[in-house]
Length: 152
Image 1 (spheres, rainbow, N blue to C red):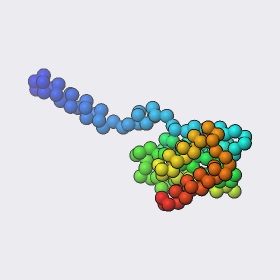
Image 2 (cartoon, rainbow, N blue to C red; image 1 turned 180 degrees about the horizontal axis):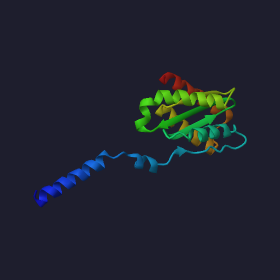
Image 3 (tube, one colour; image 1 turned 60 degrees about the vertical axis):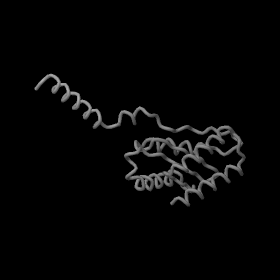
Image 4 (tube, rainbow, N blue to C red; image 1 turned 120 degrees about the horizontal axis):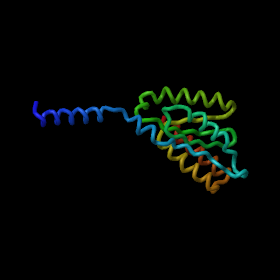
């Protein structure tokens, strides 16, 4: 073998090895999209939503969590790693059951839908800016629950 053939073979092998590697390093470097809510006492206490976020944060499949609650109603939306989406329905059912166990007496809706995630993100921003009344919060939550029911 000539020098050029050896170099070409080594270079090709290096490219193949680099391409076949897993992207776990990229996934581990990305931070989770989980922000606790801080609402003023005049609005509903968002600590149950924050507790739900903390308990769901333990799952490695989840890359982002948005959650909002009112009196005894909670909406949670999660984002899942791309390669884990094959088992999304199984995970969603298990997480739904876990949240219902953790919050007995509450109506808990858990979604893996991207649209619901984005709607909850907007609602969380409004809550953090304190631009919602209790009635507006309930109305927004009913709208999001209706959207989640339409999707399924």
